Length: 128
Image (cartoon, rainbow, N blue to C red; front, side):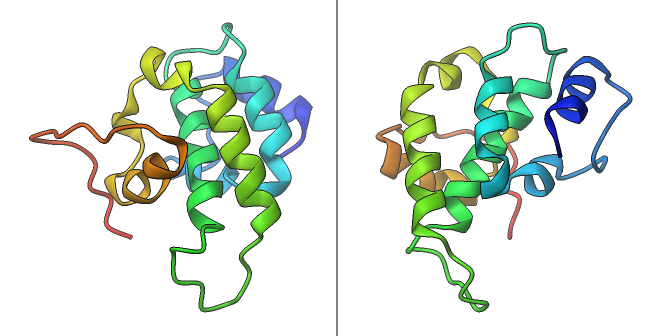
């Protein structure tokens, strides 16, 4: 996605990349700069910033050395950049609903960025 499309997407509830798993689709290393830029925007409609935060977590998860990578497509550079962005924007986890981030992603990402994993009775297990 380019900047113009992200701009439209954050303001239109009906505009979706895919009705489910948007974070997995937009969560690519190539999008990291735009993901951070739009995460920091306060004019996004409800729910879009949660997707952006989750997408950055997806990039870190997908490029983590702790995750099986049968295609050998992991990028340490993308992992490092996603970690840096998440640490720089750590307050977003307190401002936004973390339930959108799947538990299996939290188990890998949160220890890396120093965020505790809160126990919940219900949530998005999102088995990979």
